[in-house]
Image (cartoon, rainbow, N blue to C red; front, side):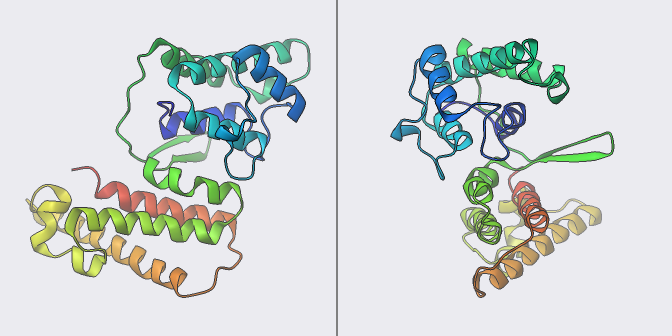
Amino acid sequence: MANLTTNEKQLLEKLFQMGSGYVLNFSDRAMGEFFRDDVGIDIFSDKYKYASGSKANCLRGFWWKADDRIVGKSILKLVEYIESQIFIGNLRKEDFSDEGIRIGKEIGKKLTSGKAEKEESKSQATFKNGNINIILQEDIFDHVQKLLNDGHYFNAVEEAYKVVRKKLKDITGKEKATDAFSATNYEKIFGHKPLSDAENDFFEGVKFLHMAIQFLRNEKAHTPARDLDKNLAVHYIALASLAYDLINRR
């Protein structure tokens, strides 16, 4: 498994235009030939098969199964491909930022150099030009990514909530927030007892956030799966990511 953080994977997915199942402007044949000739692997091999088997999912499966060196090489080759395709007019320069290309090269070089280090997994957010971009907590994102890619938004939300509840049980021995967040468990959850009234209020706020997750998950678990708006599902999952993150920072 390549040592890519959630942040790096999401940046690469944007750079390689993987949002709708494609990879850049590759056809199946062209992508197969590119990875065979430039990277030295069969990208459509069964060992890299992931979810629907789309080009984007094959690349995700490759990141998951291959080692740092070969994944790093593929990233650098794909960035070279972007630059050459822009030069000959097959891709539009305005669709690729200089910063995105620079970051792609840095990630590829990091992996090929053998200096990749696993970063602590935390949710992150950036704000630029009126847009908020959220990098989900890695344990949450990795668990629900396939469901989101396949459009199973209802199930993705339910699974995100399950991850939060499992983490709470791992820490306290109790899965239900109503049981886990007793005063005697605050040291297990937060690393110490509240040191002030303000901190006590914060701990209580985290408790009620997890109680919301508990009851929202119960609603999902006890009703048949149904169509769920993608935007709403992402908001639900971001809530789960925050809840997980707040008990994972001890």
